[in-house]
Amino acid sequence: MSRTPHDDSLASTAHTEFDTILNFRDVFDTVNKFTGSRYGLERRLYRSARPDDASSKDRQKLVKDIKIKNIIDLRSKYDPKTLLLLEGNRLEAENYLRSEHIKQAQKHDAKVASSAAVPQSNNAVAEPLKIPGITYREVNINGSAFERSLLRKLSWSSFGKLIGLMALGYRTEAISILGREVMQPRGLIGLGYDSLDSSGREIRHIFEILSESSNYPVMIHCTQGKDRTGLVVLLVLLLLDVPIDAVTHDYTLSEAELLPEKESRLEEIREIGLTEDFAGTPPDWAEKMKAHVDEKYGGISQYLTSIGVDERIQSGIRNAFSL
Image (cartoon, rainbow, N blue to C red; front, side, top):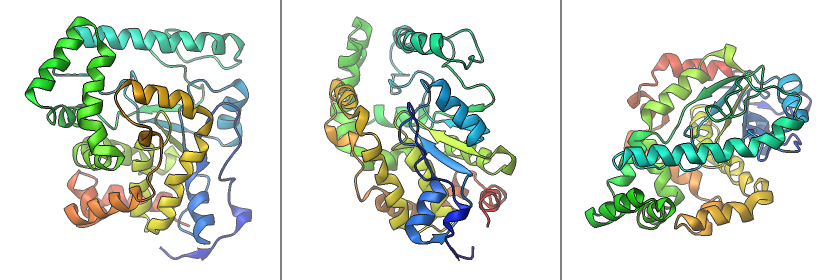
């Protein structure tokens, strides 16, 4: 793709101000301004933290001002406890998931009472509060293959203890075993490798959505819009030949953007056996992800091909951002 000097008059605002949505930005406006060149069209791809409790004003801004057509939600249906144990006590896990989702639905009640936006479904327990006028694509990027890859890293004794705790109802204690013994040693970088290696089916689905020009503008989010969202954005930017320092810049912006909820996030992190490093953005994260893709797969195009993202889909994404 040819590089043209960046014209601020053609760009959207990289950091649109919202009252209730954190970590929101226009991906290509961010990298184009950082590099001084245009690597892709602005006003096409946005990233953010969860918009579940967005105010009426912020919902209107997403629909009417930014004109978001599709939201890709990378969380599991019952986030934030995504790593529940598919190979353990399924009934116990389902009961836990249901109780967690009810808690999240209850948090919506006050928002719903004062919101002018009507949810697509009245069943608040079955579905999160969605924004009318936007199509939601739910793709749990860290799906069952990723979860199994983490569980396999536990020793047999730890796995047995984890299942026992789940069966007895000590859910947080059970998950903290996985946190302390697997997730903490792997770190954000190791878990990024695991996602790349285990989540090919999910990434392929996301890229199929992004290859259709009619789906834009698209907003991608997870809980914080930091790591899972960062991984998808990184793969798109690598495919568009964006320099790695610009990818790093975009990723590391999240740490400051998420400061308003850092303390509450740290409580959740510590509860499941992780340290505060998990609330940050390692400065070498993007470089490490690129090195993993290059060394293990031979490059971004080869990696995408290996997970079923063929040349047609790759070309569709390039065309979606062509200048």
